[in-house]
Structures are given as structure tokens and as C-alpha cells.
Image (cartoon, rainbow, N blue to C red):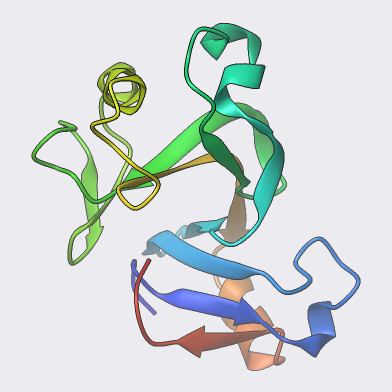
Length: 144
């Protein structure tokens, strides 16, 4: 498995936080894996968060159960957002978030360009591989 892998939860995870979840893995190494649920909208928009109350309404995604106090993002516009880390092909993790928010507010970034997450998914070394081996996740071809 590599960064850029997409995982789909199986019936073994029905009734859990990962019920019907699709996850993009953004980091995978000997220490473990990090990813984001890319198909579940959060119940509030960016402008409903106090710090971004002057922003336009922009969807947020429920990225996972870890670190739900912070925002994270993936995007496909390295030409506009500097300092992102290439995950796979034209998908980047993070970068200059202030610039990203400004570009969203200026309508220069759309939902097709960027996804913003509250929280993330994290697995310790070999934990995700064990979950895949037990049948909790299936790998899917394709990208964001």
C-alpha cells in the first residue's frame, strides 16, 4: 500500500464510525498510516466555525476520529497553494491554508479543487494492514 491508496469499508465495519466510509491514504510508512474519510460531509460548513465566520459557506468533511480540533486539507492546485506534499498524481496534502481560504472566498477554488476535513484517521505500524487482512477494508482503484 502507498500514499494515494483508496480504501472502502466492508460490511465488517457496518454500524461503526467507518460504516460506508471511503478513505484516501495520505501517508503510509513504517510508523503507520494516515488518511481521511473523503465521502462524509461534516454537519457544519467552514463559515460556521468561529475562526472562519467571515468565509463563504464551504463544505467540510468528517475526516476521521483523530484530532477533531484541527482542519486538514487535500487539493489538486499546487499552482495556487504552495507547500503541499504530493500524495499521488495531482493530489496534494496540506500547504498554505490561509492562501487556500482566501482563494475559496475569492471563488478561485471550488469543491473539485479542495476538500477540507475536521479530523483524520490514523493507524499504528501494521495496524491498517491487519484490518485489510481481516477483511475490514478493500482497496479501490482510482483517486480523489
